[in-house]
Structures are given as C-alpha cells and as structure tokens.
Image (spheres, rainbow over the protein chains, first blue to last red):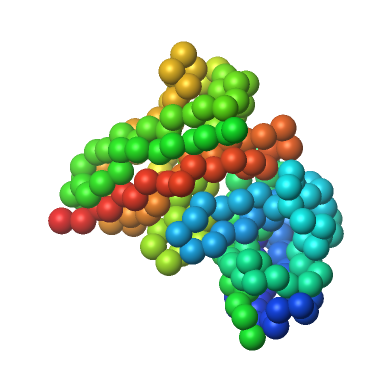
Length: 108
Length: 118
C-alpha cells in the first residue's frame, strides 16, 4: 500500500503571500499525483493532475511540481477564496487510489 | 455540464444495509470509470471503490471488501454502492466521482451522508 503524507497539517498564510504545501509518497508514484481543493460543505475539486498540469478552469496561481516521492503545490498569491483544505492523491497503482490526510490552509 | 447527484444516504443501525445511488448527466457515462469516495465527519478523503466502464472490473479498499458492492447501469446513467454489514466507522459523506482520462477524479457529486448508529 502506498502511503501519502502531507505537511504541514495546518498552514497559516496572509492574503497575497505565497503558500507551499508538501506531499510525500512512501514509494515512487512517478508523476501520477493529483491535488484537490475542498471548501467547507463542498465536494472536492480537482486542481492539478499529472503532478503539474492544471485542470480546466484552474487559475495560473496554482502550480504543482515534483515526481517520484516528493511533490509540492504552490499558490503564488493567495486570494480569499483559496483558504481551504488541500489533498494530494496518488494514482500510480490505479485503479486503486490513496489520498493524503490533507493540509488546512488558513488565514494568518 | 457534468452533474453527479447522489442519493440514498440516511441513518442505519450497525449490521444494517443501505444502497447509495448516483445519477450522472452531461457526459457519456458508459465511457468512464466511476468511483466512490467517502469522508468521515471532520476527517480526510478515503477512496472506497472503482468500477470499469462496462462493470467487468471492480476494486475496493480493504476495509470494505466483502461488505460493499459497486455496480452501474449504463442504460440508466447510474452508479450504485450496496453497503452491507455496516459499522459505526462507515459513517461518512459518500461522494461519487468520475475518473477522467488522466485517471484523476475530475468531477464529484455533492455527497450523501450515511450515519451508522443505534
């Protein structure tokens, strides 16, 4: 089983600043990594797939990087609507999926 | 516009059964893998099950194997999750999601809440 570990659990950042979220896989998942955003009371939304490709309609301030076991989601200039919980997900052993435990991005 | 609408959640006693449904529209349902993902109250996301386009392949997380069954009816554009022998730890919001060409989950429903309690 591939275990996904996200850090930090909570990240406090001021609007307009950059946020960097990390995701680590217990074994290589190549570039088979997605990022999701979830706001309270809402379903998750796909942000990034293939580690670095933005999904349709996702603003350019969201970027993903990494491969193998280390991945990063960067939000270049935080907007008020970006404060949410972010999950990484591996699909290297698709059709089995594993999610990370999430990082809560909160307003500083 | 892609829409996924779950239904069938509710309160059930431990050991009981429940069948969730997901009505799909706005895309060619029979062309996509479909998934169920759950989220316990205040917790993270947990993938539950996947089903191939024609229903010939099904995969489950270990914790539900032998208790849950995923199925689909392409003629009705519907996805199902039959849940038997329910436990308190199955309490969660259950989402259906479409597996897109990238294999990520591109579209999600709004979820249906299942509560297992006596």
